[in-house]
Length: 377
Ligand SMILES: Nc1ncnc2c1ncn2[C@@H]1O[C@H](COP(=O)(O)OP(=O)(O)OP(=O)(O)O)[C@@H](O)[C@H]1O
Ligand SMILES: [Mg+2]
Image (cartoon, rainbow, N blue to C red; front, top):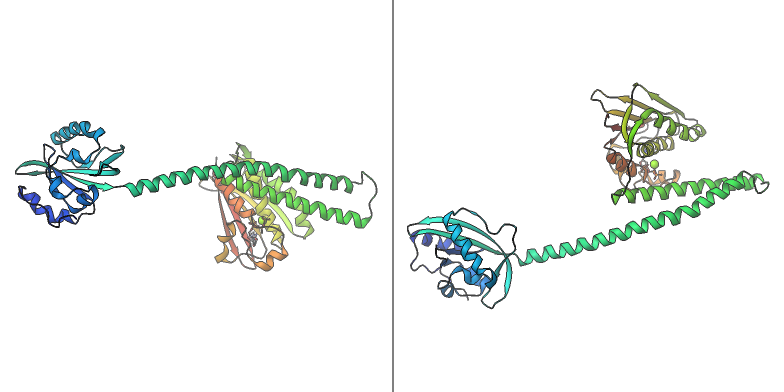
């Protein structure tokens, strides 16, 4: 049982004054004099080290240190008393305390000197960090485990990417040759059904590609290739690819490039993919009117590409949510439109990889504008 009162015999006045204060400190407080002799301890010291106060006051502070550190500590203690200042002890080192029963425990110690009539004394605050160490160890083990899981995920992705794509490519390829009537003639109904097979397979392939892309970006595996890219040509490629689906909905698809030199260092594939998603959405979520792609250089030198549609629009409270994975706004919409809700999620991730920003403005029933702002060079 720790004795309740601080032993006050033979103590300089100043220490006696602080005795009660130390008593309530959460750390073990040990005050030593220049010869290493313990002159004052608090109750927490008794609890932590298993000695009674009376025992401690007949020892030097080295009693509380494992044997293997003692000699070195005596040297350090001498040095400290020559140039005392408030500081942590053994920064960066693992420090241990030694209990009366011979067991050790990890500690953190801070030292503060103070002057008394009897010379310099040093107070050390000693904290048992066993729990923290255990926590750090558990955290480290968890991290190692996570890394393992991550690696497994990566190789799973690489394998799946191949396993999923190969049969789909076969389906798309052979449907193509059937539709080209290479093996022989088709009835109109057969051709119609094969076209459905082909477009569904293409859709599935683009979905798988999106999912694999998201996984790759998330695991930091996206391989980017920065080169000089002319924004106008990328826009043309995207517009050309999506024009048929716009025209089949009787939408006008316009591309307008208003500045001369819109060349910057970026990843062409990422840029094309983002624009493809934005223009694809604009066409998908617009029943009537037009889809307008505009690119210009802003005053601050950055390049903006805006995709504006005259479609259903997006409520302001939904505007951030739609960048999350698998978010589709309206359930009834979901039934009407194909897709899984990965396009914008992927686009925003790709945008941040190429240091671009993707924002949206919209008015319900009037239309939306998605703007990609790219660094100017
Ligand atoms: N131009 C737009 N006009 C109105 N709503 C839009 C527009 N673009 C996106 N949205 C809304 O945001 C949701 C998320 O878009 P996102 O592109 O991520 O998914 P998706 O188009 O549904 O599916 P995916 O792109 O994976 O095929 C859409 O489901 C739609 O509700
Ligand atoms: Mg989409």
